[in-house]
Each structure stands twice: as C-alpha cells, then as structure tokens.
Amino acid sequence: MKKTAKQLTAILVLGLGLGCGVAVAEEQSEPKPPLPLEELRTFAEVFERIKGAYVEPVTDEELLENAIKGMLSGLDPHSAYLDPRAFDSLQVNTSGEFGGLGIEVGMEDGAIRVVAPIDDTPAQRAGVQPGDRIVKLDNKPVRGLDLMQAVNLMRGKPGTKIELTIMRDNQPQPLVLTLTRAVIKVTSVKQRMLDDNFGYLRVSQFQVHTGEDLVKAIEKLKQQGQLRGLILDLRNNPGGVLQAAVEVSDAFLEEGLVVYTKGRIQQSDLSYSATPQNPSGELPLVVLINSGSASASEIVAGALQDHGRAVIMGTPSFGKGSVQTVLPLANERALKLTTARYFTPNGRSIQAEGIVPDIEVEQATLTRLDTRQRVKESDLVGHLDNGNGSDAAQGSDNGRSESDAKLLENDYQLNEALNLLKALSIVAVKAS
Image (cartoon, rainbow, N blue to C red; front, side):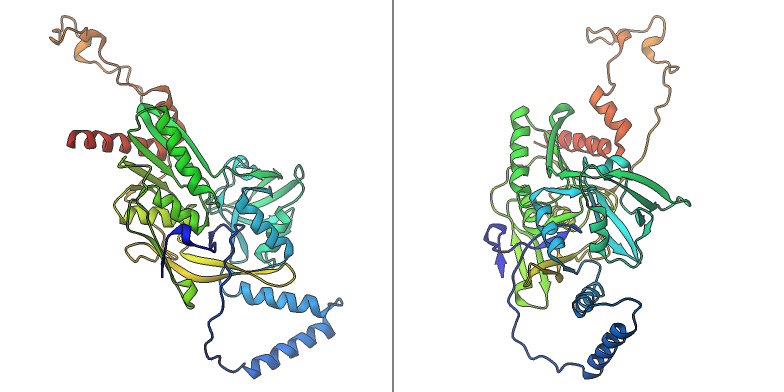
C-alpha cells in the first residue's frame, strides 16, 4: 500500500510521550486461539484476593482499570491506556499548546527518563537535559507510578511550582530542580539567517502543521537574501506526528521513498513517498541530531541520509523506531498501542539503535588561544609589499563575524555545522 502524506486519512504518533494522533484501524478477521482458561482462573483468583484482603476497600471498576493499565504497560514503554484526562492531554499537545513543564518523557526501569526538554519552556530554562532520570516529584518517588500518573503529577495550574529530583549520568549526587509550571505554547519551526546567507531551521517537535510551517520558513529565508545552504536542527526533538515527518522530508526531496511501516495488521503496512515539489532546491543541507532526537526526527534524518540529500552531523539519535496508533474507546478513553515498526528508505530499522551521524561531533566548549604574540611577515621591518596594491602591513581581516563568534562560544555543534555548510557551498560553486 503506497500513499503520500496528503492521502492519509489517519494520523500516527511517533515519539512524544505526550504527543497525539488518531488512527482508527479495523481489526483483521483472523482465527483466534481459545482463551487460556488457567490464566483466567488465576486472574479471577487474584481479583477476589485483592478485593477481600487489601488494606483498604477497592471497587471492581478500579481493579479492572488498573488491570488494563498493567496489560498495556507490560508491552513496551510507549503503549498506554489513556483515561479521559490523558486522552485530552494527548490531543492538546499536537495542537501546540498545553500546560505543564515542557518535558517529553518515557518510562525506564521504574524511573521517568527525559527524552528531551521542549524549547523555551520551564524545563529547558531550568537545565533539564536528555537522558536525565526523574526519581521524585515533590519528594514523592515515581517508582510504582505508570507514565501517565507521573505526567499528571507534573502537569498543573500555570504559576504553581514543582520540585524534580533528577539523577544524571556522571554525577553521583541527585539534582533537585524547582520548576514553575506554565502554559506551554510550542512553535514547532523557527528560522533565522546565519552569516553569509546560510539559513538555520529549528524544528522542536512534529505537530500537525509542522510541514507547511517549514516550507513557509524556507520561503522567508529566501526573501532575506540569496540562500547558500541550510542547517536543519533536529536536536532534542522527541518526535510527533508521522505525517509531519513525511512532509518535512518531502521539503528536501523530489522523489523516492521517505519511510515505510510494517506491522501485524494490513493497515499498519504503509509507505510514504516524496512529491516533486522541493522548496529547498539543491541547496547544500546539514542536519543536526543528538541523543534527544527521537522517532519522527529519526525518520527525517534517515530519509535524507539514505537519499544522500544531507550530511547528518552530531551524535547518535535516540533509537525509537516504533509507531503508536491511538485507538479511541468508549467513555472518552483510548489505547495508545504500538502497532508497527518503521524503516528508512534503505530498509533500516533504527529501533534501539538510532541514526548514526555521517560526521560525529560531540557538544563541547572551546577556549580561544592567545595569538597576540604571533609574528607574521607583515610585522617585520622592511618587509616587501605584496605587489597587489594593498597595504600588506595591515594584513587581512580573517576573523569571524560577531554572529559566528557567538556560535563558537555557545553552540559548538551548530558552529561546526555552519563550517561544513560553508565548505559544501564553496565546493558546489567551484564544481559548477
């Protein structure tokens, strides 16, 4: 089954612990094995033992709902049972506005693992980092909570505070951060012009309108000057809507497969191809990724890497190669169920492996060396003129602009991407 993004009538979710998408799939009629009677007897016995012996009274409804939650949480870290509040939160998130801290999270070994903080949110401003493990919320241990329970604790009225106790790799002592909840308004695409007409595109997550917003951002950059190349920054982008990932990839490709999915039911076997429209043209392209780049971000990076359209730079991505379908139930509830794995155009499954950059660059801080003591030919008394009619004694200004210097100081990976993009642009000009 081959479809372009615009032919899809359903939205699938990739990444985004709180992301949303709805796909209603009819179940295939296939022979079903008989129910395991022994296990059902065990379930009924446990059910009755809890009702009769638990320290506090518990209703049948509570026990059954908890049983459903346990059934889903035992499958994988991304499948979940959504009560009305969680289902509503899931749908609100892809609209780009919701209340909370701005953290995309997953469950790992009883702790809440941060996939990525969202740009311009309380979590990012407080210094929350990808890979952090949240072990306590307001001094309450998260062990024993399911993912949605923990998320509900982090959400709350804007202006209220919450204390996060975080364990971070390479730091023996836990970090205690106090964050103030806010209304999270996420602008999924931002753009700006870097030095010498090189465009910078930042995609923080994949929402329903991210694809069209990216095309608009490219057009705005074109209006600012003659573009010489583009940087697409997908670092700390936890994913989102599959259709948006396809549309973003399509903005840089003219043809060919973008991604395909494979699952147990026919509706899970889909493929998505690029359309001839290509607003980026043949501009040199560098894509930045890191360990916080997950799922939909990995689709884009994998597609552009397989087609040879971009140089992928940074550190290996998160490695979430599964698709979640949100299946609405009665009473405003839903299942977020893993229904397929996705594959890059060359047939790579990145589940638990991630996208490996073409050029691996760790984030770092550089210290400038003092070069004032260096002596050049132009410093020597009686040096010859260069014969070009210019004053060689003044030398040439090969220093970085203020913008480039700031990049070098604040974002080493982005600075290296800009250097590479400049090199690609020079090579392209010389080859033409």
